[in-house]
Length: 286
Image (cartoon, rainbow, N blue to C red; front, side, top):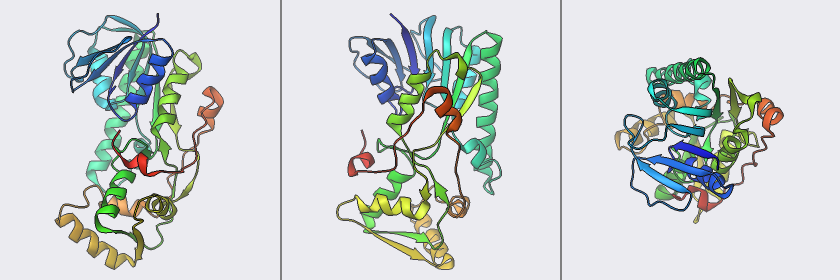
């Protein structure tokens, strides 16, 4: 029986990934910081990337749905034999590299360093490693972008945007990301590669938000404001603790295209994500 070790097994990508592995007959060991009950074919270990007791010495696949930089450091010191290492990173490695926000630049730097360390460690051990870089993630009610927009809009009954928030986006569902990780296990064509994983539809930031609001009940109103007025409102919201994560750099990106090429993933493992058709359920914690 094939075996897999999954970090971040209880996360928004980890849970659907565990289901795919379990349904395919894998023996799965999943790591979470929280307590979970074992199931036939699924063993839970409580821990994190600093300390996990009871890890196996060998698995066919090692997958991480958690922070890439911490995972790469753990893997570099872990005495674990794995046939294929698959880790989720982020397209923020490119998007935030030149950000005006120092914290965002640091995020991009940590992603770059994490990817390099992971590939170097795997190569030194003669192991194939693959990095998957999602774009805007949604689908399990745990993301910090679209779900937060839905929550704020429901709370206040409306959601403001600056005018000309027309930068292009490609939101991607968690189930499509889990399916991608599952599909590439053992595929040597993916060894040493990092793949962008955008969603199956490209649309403007404004239209993306409008679709989110349209499925909520009652449907909040989308209000487009002149930039000076929007900025004042944003400052007030931040002071009240309602707009963490919507900083100056994030607002500026609303007018920038963040579009990524899915062709390499489509070519190498048939990646075919769904278009952006949200339902109310995708903004509820699952």
